[in-house]
Amino acid sequence: MAAALLLVTDSCSREEPAPEERGRISVSISGGNIVTRSLADDIADGSAIIVDGVTGEPDLVIGIVDSGGDLVAWWPDDYWGSMATGFTSECQTDKTDETKSTIYFTGPARGTYTVFAVANTAGLSSSTITALQAATTLSALEAIQLTVDSGEPGFGATMPLTARGILNVNSWGNGQIDLNLLRPVARLSLTFVNQTDGAIDIHDCSVTFQDLNPSRGYLFEQDPDYVTGYGRDLTVNGTDPLVFTNNRSTLPVKTVFPSIAPIRLVGSRYFLNVHFRVTKKDTVYDENDSDTYTPYDFEDLPIHDSRSRDIPYILRNQHLKIDTRITKRADEHDYSFNFEVQDWYEKEEYVTFD
Image 1 (cartoon, one colour):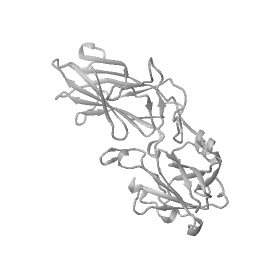
Image 2 (tube, rainbow, N blue to C red):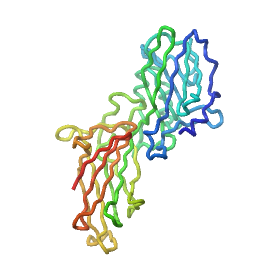
Image 3 (cartoon, rainbow, N blue to C red):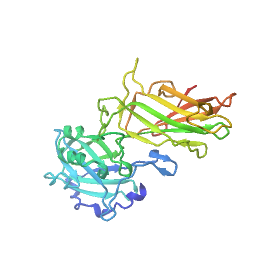
Image 4 (spheres, rainbow, N blue to C red):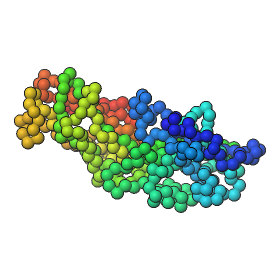
């Protein structure tokens, strides 16, 4: 990300800043930090702000809404048409922090404003961009949704990043806000970890996450951050057999919109279905011969944290990571499985199913 943002230069200036006595507010945008990395030296997909290699301008849109709910200032100054009377803007790069871009506005009156930011609009559908450019009020901006027809959100390298926050402008016309851009989706992944001190073959592996957000999510984070509707189960299939590298085999990572678990009995909870077959000792796997493998079928496994509490929400910018640890018992064909659930940031939680 730092390499990408290094291209952002003063060429993104729209016009010279207004005289200091008029006051000036700054909107600083951060594309993420080390906690969004999937590994120590590996930046997670979708964490960088796209930069135009010719103009040096970031793919970034800023909108400022006043206390009456009207859009009154924005950058770039042609995104919502001509700039509102009395406002000017310019974009600069913070030379001491290459992960930030700062937009300066001059001319705002004293008051409280809501700031909206979208990075990587190239990853948005044409209908979403149309809705964004037509949304000139607070309520319209908050109502914008991202949708997929089927499957899962698949933004790839052009993952949109969004933020919103409250800006206070004093009587001198000065103010500052720092916004942290977030992905509008969460990640789901499951990894098998071989702790048997020997080789192991796993076939016909599938994992199903139940009752996820079916196909919609809000562009901007809000409370609540999910839309109503349940019923979509997301199934992830592994290679056959699973390929273990350094005793680990990770199924394809999936993305989902933020959601709340449906009420099951008492409280809200999510469930997993996990199915796979383990080749028996000194045999060759034959999918049509049950004598060559031991089947493992786990149905309706509730996803808990380390204190056995249900996880009721899947939030944007989180990573629900489940490690299935295979350990050897007295019977060499018997295994136990430990599900490790991690937040996108640093929390590590454990729960075991035998």
